[in-house]
Structures are given as C-alpha cells and as structure tokens.
Image (cartoon, rainbow, N blue to C red; front, side, top):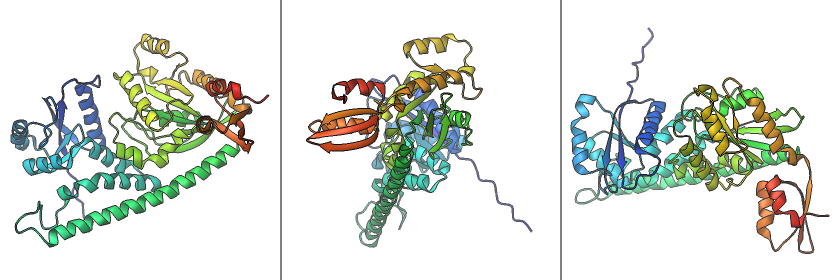
Length: 423
C-alpha cells in the first residue's frame, strides 16, 4: 500500500511596513509590492498588507503597540500564519513581536535568506547561504532558542538553561568559522580559475542587474547556455561562465551573477563575496535593466550602490535596457537612451536589438586586444593597484623604483596613465 503524504499547507502571510518621516524616493508602496513578490517567490500567499506612519520605528515592537494589538485581533479571520516586516528587525523587536502575536515573525532579511536557501544548488551556494543564515541567527539565539521553553533569566531559570544557550552560541560560532575557512578555499579556487582564463587574454564581462532583469536569458541567448531562466526573483544564484565569440573573432567570457536588490542584506553581500568577486575581477560590466518595470531609475541606482560596495563601480560598463518587447511604444526607450548615451535597447527573450549589443561589446573591448606598456613610479602604488583592478596585467617587473607593466587596459584608464606610457 502506497502511503500518500498530506499536501503541505501554504503559508498565509501578512506584510507590515513603516512610513517613516522623510520617505525616500523608494516609495513605501513600491517597497511593499516588492516584499509581496519576495513572499510569493518564497512560496507564501499574501493575504493582506498593513502600513503605519511613524517618525521612526519604536524600540519594543518596530510599529506602535496599539497598531500591533489591532493587527493581532485580525489574525483569526484572515488565518495568518506568518507576519513579514519590510525592514530588518532587531533581536528584541523580533522576540517581543513573536511573544505578542504567537505567530512566526520574519523580516525582509530572513525572507531573502529563505529564498536563497531554496534556490542554491551548488556546494558553494549552499555554503554561502548557511554562513549568511548563521551570521543572522547568532545575535538572535535567545529569541529562537527553545531549550526548556523561552527563558529570559531570573528566579528559577538560572543554571542548565543558560549553560545550554552558551553551548549553542559556541557551536554556531565554530560552524561560522568552519564555513569561512571553506569559503576561503572556494575563493582561492576561483582565483586560480580566473588566472587560467587570463592566460588566454580573453576579456571577461560580468552580467549585473536587478533581480529578474533577464541576465540568465541573455546569457543563454548569446552563448547557447542552458541556465535556468524564470520570471521570478532570484531564479538563479550560482554564477555561470560561458565563452562567446564576437563577429570580429574576438573571444570573450560572459559570467552570469546573482541578481541585486535594494535593501540587499549586508550579511548576504559578505557571505557571497566568493561569488561577487566575479564582478570586481571582471574586465567589463554589462548592466542589464528591465525597462518595462515602473521603477527603472531606482533599479539602476540600487545596482550602482552594490557595485560601489564591491569596488567595481568605475569599471567600463555597457548599459543595456532589456524587455523592450513589453513596451507599447518606442518613446520610452528613446528617452532613456537619450539620458544614457551609448546604451542599448534589446529583448533577450525575442532577440530584438541584440545585434546592436554585440556591436557595443565589440567597441567596448576593442582596446583589450592591444598590449600597453607603462612605467609607473613605485611611489604611486594606487595607480599600480588600479591597473590590476581595472586592467589585464600580462607582465610586471620592478626596476629602479619603477614598475614596468605590460597590460590591456580600458580606454579611460589608458588616458589617465598617458604620462606613464612607455615610449
């Protein structure tokens, strides 16, 4: 007899956001819409969303206690199983809210970590996700700890309980240290792989963009790869590199990277550095933007902020506006291309405009086929570091306080180094 497993009940989520004084142009309504997309992507059904206007979050409950009590009364009729907050909660806020609501309480960071945990396929991806989860968990152990029920110390609770909590903390810290060592090994392997690619002197372009901008679809179109491409947030996490030959026979490598997001948790950026180094080490960035999205400018800004944090913002970049097939007329793309000279409009789904993108890539990496020689004084280490960071160093020798460098560099860096060019 075959045992039929009961169907897992879908979680029903209530979303909560705070309209603080001096709301930024990342409007609260749009932030809540994105939170709903994230919740759906995690497998939850959003039953309602609630916002409150406050000057700043309250220390005990993030929202006002009266508002929290009112929300609690609506649980039964809506059959809510999870409450998700739009911003990160402090450990104390999370603990107080769970005690008040008697429901699972999550914040945006936990939600994103859960989605990443579902999507990660490679060993590297799973290591990075576990590290981010443990780093988030460590200061919140008291809230999540259930040995001898929830305890906050005091009469009748001292002794074994507190000892067990310290044991748990130590185990989490040891696991974090072990994961960091393993990921350091991953970074070394990636460094060796990059050095192997550099020996071929092929330019490397990293596809960057807001999540669900169409990076994997474009990689599949250009290289014939079979990377998972779905219309949902964070469909792919693990980086994929494929070779691509331009019509002028220039060989280059394209690397698909994890999608970016406004309010992307800092712990996630730290944990994913082994992956995100592909962005900082690339010769060229292809910044893909979903032009059909109503918050195009905010998406561009969010990606720029993350690339700045990765030290890659000043790299040579080709700005590509994707999903032009979803636009009703051409005025929208024309306006954005006028604002961003040199940008390209395409549809990675249909192939429209891809010829223009290929020509832009040929032009962007044309200088990479020529070796440049520079004699840089050792007294200017920042310039030597910049050549390493933005260029493609082929040979480096130090003679008489001068670094003699042979490298491929992008045009803007070549102009900056013109006075050090070897005759």
